[in-house]
Amino acid sequence: MMDIIELKKKCSDMRKDIINMTADAASGHPGGSLSAVEIMAALFYTQMRIDPKNPDKEDRDRFVLSKGHAAPCYYAVLGEMGFFDKSEFKNFRQLHSILQGHPDAKKVPGIDASTGSLGQGISIAVGMALGAKAQKKDTKVYTLLGDGELQEGQVWEACMAAANYRLDNLTIIIDNNGLQIDGSNDQVMSLGDLHSKFKAFGFHVLELPDGNNLEEVLAAYSLSTMEGKPKCILAHTVKGKGISFMENQVGWHGKAPSEDERQLALKELEG
Picture 1 (cartoon, one colour):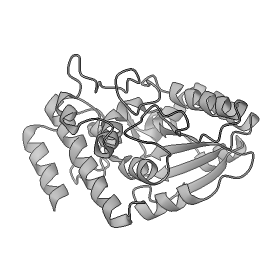
Picture 2 (cartoon, rainbow, N blue to C red; picture 1 turned 60 degrees about the vertical axis):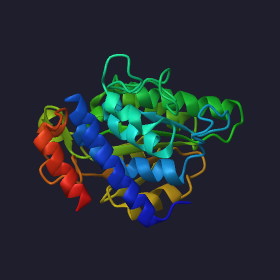
Picture 3 (tube, rainbow, N blue to C red; picture 1 turned 45 degrees about the vertical axis):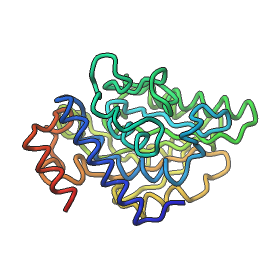
Picture 4 (cartoon, one colour; picture 1 turned 135 degrees about the horizontal axis):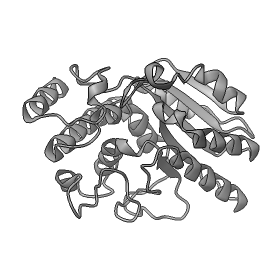
């Protein structure tokens, strides 16, 4: 298993990949991709039963990026792990590229579900977990949601189903960075007490004060799921994490860095 120093280096590499992808394309969603780096790196490198050389292996674990616009982070971890050649990064969001603005399971090795319409990803993940239970497989299913995505009613229908069917093979992770495309969550539609809500919906809830702290993230993943209960990791993160001029700035939700901003960002990450 990769040690913490190597994993932190991978997080830095992933952030560079995100910046370069979005800058090359002059398009994309860097803010919510950067906030999810530690969540994704820790999950893929230390938790999931997956094989880059055999991405369709039947007994693999499954992952669904419910916040599909954070595709640059997803592509970064898959590329760094060797699911596809990193030269593909330069084609991000280009016509006929495998790396489109949202994940396409038909085109990209390692992607288990095509996502983009918010709320649908967690529903797919619940179906995967339920299917694994029905087939008596030990498959673990993970899904990453944005906090703004929780304003979708379909999310809560999926959560009710996950608890009803006692899907203790399902872990949902909330990238709770506090910002969405139109402003802060509180300005758009307050989410209230998420910890209490998920607990009331029947989840075993783990709340991370700093979801960009690798040690905290790894500790949350390592804790066993309670029997008969799906797990929710509520991770408080920073939008644009790692780039000083992007951090906690709502404008970077869906805006790509210019060439000058790319160079500033890469210099910070090198430092």
